[in-house]
Image (cartoon, rainbow, N blue to C red; front, side):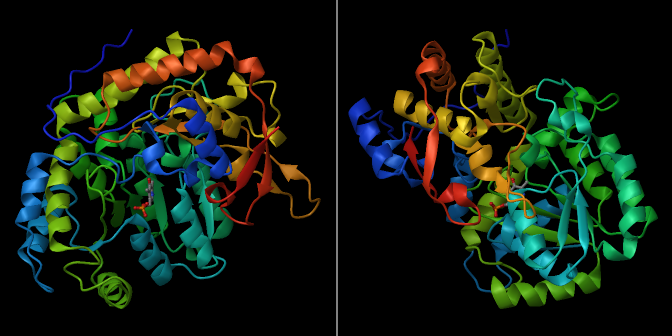
Length: 458
Ligand SMILES: *Cc1c(COP(=O)(O)O)cnc(C)c1O
């Protein structure tokens, strides 16, 4: 049994949460059309919808916010962030952005032309969307092990280097404006990428003259997995590992709402002078001046402190240990999950949990709804609601391989008893699983339907 890591902090500000009674939860779900995105947050007891921007800031971050310099241009806050950016990432240039997708918007706007391809291990959905919005073709080339829910590969986020070479030869390097890799692989379960794999991927891209960009949202968690799991890396600090990773790339972007431990923020960093100039012009048009990029000065300060705290190894041992503990408890209770556990979330395998509910009746939706009705817990369906689509030729529905419910873990926010409680709720659902029924969609927009679809229980 994995021990629960003792939190390397104590709590000095509390935010009350409340489990509303079962009949009120039932009513809340009816009003929400059984879509958890439509719930009022105050009706949720434990909110694991996302780990993005939902974490807890430290006393040092709050203190730094008070020193925020709100000058329009050249603020002290910007220079404090620039120092930290240099220390960790080492790129020649960067601009702050208000989130990760703002950086993606600018990068794809400048580089992606219709018909061009952008390979990655797996693109996150906002990256995928931004590439498509420019007429580009996002391509996922993760290793096959990533699709096997019980394969214990230590770096299931790795890119298949041979597939990448073949792909570049096939479409031609001139049709690839930049290549990418996502660390950790969010869309693939928060699985890490090894330093060796990043090195090989960089080599392949550079061999063909393709600029290499890293989607760095969870770079600190990834660095910690490298330290733990990769031969020859145990003696390196997570900061040294991060520096080695980014030294291999021509640029990176990040949603600071993840490993920079802030509620809002991001950046886009590059080496190339000309590209940087064009990024600045685009940023000024859409986000703000180059030294604030759509953020307040205080946000830049919180980010500067959060980036360093996110790399702290005691924090990371607790963070990754908490996820591992939660996964271990679920496994011992016989609840099917994707293994091994990644960094920021647990993925319940609703397909195995509710084998009597077919794809067309949304087993993931059924489990996510049951978790809320039974225990006030909010996760998110990642299955047929999110990813089933009709074949453009035959019109036949194509369903994803896996029907999952993601329980994302906000940073420094919930304690052991919260996780133990969730395990108890899932145990009780296990006992009544034959009684759980599927759902029918009563309304859905054509794209990204999971956000606004409405359901009815069958
Ligand atoms: C969250 C995320 C993004 C997008 O960032 P936002 O801040 O939500 O716009 C991009 N890539 C990955 C891997 C992410 O996890």
